[in-house]
Image 1 (cartoon, rainbow, N blue to C red):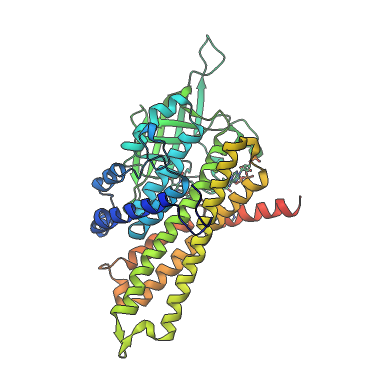
Image 2 (cartoon, protein in one colour):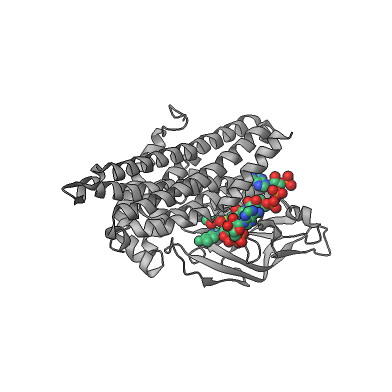
Length: 416
Ligand code: CAA
Ligand code: FAD
């Protein structure tokens, strides 16, 4: 299903999903947003609603209980949820773009059969890469997975994971954890990433625990926890992809995830803008007229609208580029995807995330000012959107890491 214009038009399926998600967000999320922020916890009923409506298995094929839609649909849902609550949006984002995609792309038939149905219908997932001493420098992780090799075979039958991960989104609710661990700690430091392997760890595995829940500036309803592995034993069949392929899996997933965060940020910016623009054009009068009729404010509103449009174009350009790569992969196989096209997508994803998070911060900050005192108090949602916007420049690679990604690709291209 090709949209009429590759960037700006949604397909019919995407439009239908957009309407359904928007209705769900207005009816089921909006009434709870303020309280969820105050108590710093997600309402379980909201999570159930996300599953019941098929928003947690958007790209999972129908045979596994999912909605069988494409990447663009997942992005539309993330954007739409963020207009109302960026916390609910990130829960859906991590689950769909990082966890579900990992199973769809890299899991064995056995793992797909075991984990895709619960992921589509009832079990939240988490992605565990960051550690206390390795955030941006993610491949310097200290968590290890040590193989157990039975005497009867040369292949490991299981791995024992030790270490801890921090900042893990959804951890309070998740039943399925994707865990990146070092399986070859003796590699030299410039090769260490080639020892990283990705494991599936169900929550009820012995030695696995979820501990400290962070108290945060923004997206306070989203749970962010430390998770610990104390001799956690998982069978070798729980490896996603192959041994040593974990870093590629992590980065390929994060490229898609970064587009998701871009969508979360444009949704947030639009949600804040809608509240602010309505206030200054139709509600608040000073000096005898609506305050946006003063050019000083009207031009700011126009600038904000322009920024959102530009950020949205970057996000959906990255979406359509990724979908083109998928089509190439289906038609020609992995080798049929030219490296340049793959790298062009990596750059577009980094740009979309970087720019959309700047725009979200600028626009939501402006909305607080446009609304004066009313923007600063916790009666409305403006101040919350501003607090929530800050995370866009931090997770799934900080803004400097996005700049570094773009700069490295430019260097490679220009010096080849
Ligand atoms: N896409 C594909 N491959 C990539 C890549 C990308 N964006 N970035 C790096 N790589 C590959 C490189 O090609 C290289 O592979 P080869 O050796 O096979 O050629 C390998 O990774 C190492 O690359 P670098 O030498 O550039 O590695 P580095 O050590 O300088 O950089 C990095 C490390 C981890 C890639 C870093 O640039 C980075 O992206 N850090 C941010 C980590 C991150 O995004 N964490 C997010 C955690 S999840 C999360 O945050 C979820 C949430 O909040 C909701
Ligand atoms: P650091 O890496 O210590 O960075 C600190 C500062 O130094 C930043 O400004 C950064 O840009 C700058 N910096 C670092 N290196 C460079 C460089 N080479 N050049 C220039 N500047 C540099 N992780 C997960 O694995 N799973 C999750 O689900 C998850 N969810 C998260 C949810 C929240 C709410 C938060 C706050 C974080 C989450 N993270 C998650 C972790 C997140 O990805 C990291 O916080 C992020 O990658 C940055 O790492 P750090 O916090 O260690 O900061």
